[in-house]
Image (cartoon, rainbow, N blue to C red; front, side, top):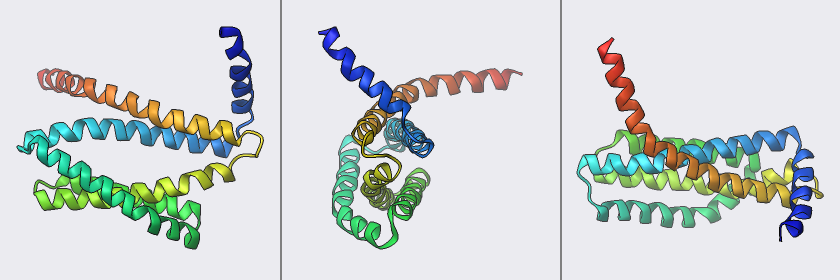
Length: 182
C-alpha cells in the first residue's frame, strides 16, 4: 500500500515545487484566514456564553450566517463577473472583517445577528472568488494539485486555529498573572 502512495505523493511534491510565488502567497493567505477562523469560531462561542446567550441563540446565529451566505453566493458571483476575482475576494474579506468586528463589539441580539449576516456575505464573496484566483496563479499542469493543497490548507489551518484557541485562554491568563506580578 505504501508503495502505491509513493508515486502520487512524489507527483504532489513536484507539483507543489512548481507553484508560482503568487500561488504560494495565496496559499499563505488562505492558511492565515483558516487559522483566524478557527480561533474566532472557538473563542466567539465562549464569548457568547459569557454574555449569557444559550445554545439556542448560538444555533440561530450559525443558521443566520449559513442561510445568508448561501443566498449571497449568487450576487457574489455577479460581483465577481462585474469587478473581477481580486476585487471580489478583497471586498469579501473586508465585509467579513466588518461583520466580525460588529460581532466582537456587540452585546445586543439583533446586532450579533446582523454581524453574522454581514460576515457571511463577505465569506460568500471570498469563496466565490477563490477558485478563479487559484486558476489565475497556476498553470493547467499543477492546477488540480493547487486546488487540493488549498482545500487541505483551509481545513487543517482551521483545526490548528481551533486547537490554538483552546490553549490560548490559559496562556493569556498565565501571561496576565505573570505581568501583574512584575
